[in-house]
Length: 102
Image (cartoon, rainbow, N blue to C red; front, top):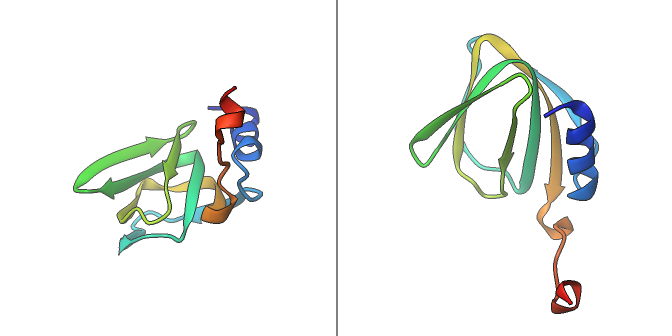
């Protein structure tokens, strides 16, 4: 995904303005969750997220999405990681009514 596509998803999904995050090689964060939905675009390096015992690594150009309350672990790759992170408060999630489907 490129930056323009990411920005479009941020806007359409009612996320906050993205913030650049940097994590050095060796960064690890134990099991935790967030009270918000997270959307992130990897700019450089890589990050591995572990959810329900399954690891998935994301590298430059890839996006990860974590719904609020998802328990996970984080670990930066060998070169560390740089990414854009946007948040969406649960109350700000778009809702769809029956009228939207008609």
